[in-house]
Image 1 (cartoon, one colour):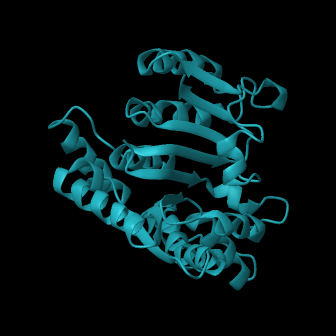
Image 2: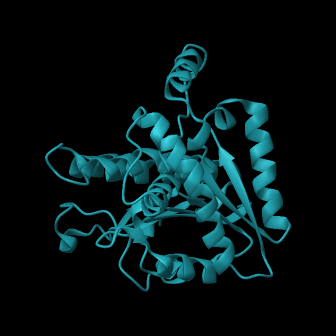
Length: 275
């Protein structure tokens, strides 16, 4: 029924030690010990890690003489190699590690989508772990907006993939993953982003339709611009409906926990499933 065991995604800030504003190598080490063929891993972090590295090499100064989009492209280009270096360093050396950089057209054009699907599923069969990220370093915002505007005039559904949560959900749908695991700096979906005791531990429906209805009802918990962190979690809820339609079980949990423990429910998390 499923072509892939797990599609996982980790957010930028889950890879950073906030107090020190440095890379959290413990997270890379923990992930590397668990990643294996059959997993497709979407990793944010190139822009933040590139910024950290640039500042470290330039007396703590940032790039200030360019537009923000151009600055982020520079940081992403610098951070991608460091991101991949750390995955390669900690993943079991008997497994191949492959970098896959995607853009919106890879999911909006059928032939490109078919190619990406085969590339990712070939990794599953070839003892390789793909590390996927949006190709920020060559993504021009104005060009992208024009391309997306044109696509919206031609087709009903348009994938943007600027947010790696959306990229992860699209890939989980594309390869029919058994699990979609989203790692964050939160223990899961919180009704109150400032209160971990408000964790929503599970969202269940007797069928896919009821589950999606329950997810839509939960979106109200993520409304209100005054509540810090609400918008990010709402976006996750927006995106996970598509893989759920394929029977994928979705889990949102903290990056400090092991993948196995999150899947088995040995730690706190939010799980979305039919049951």
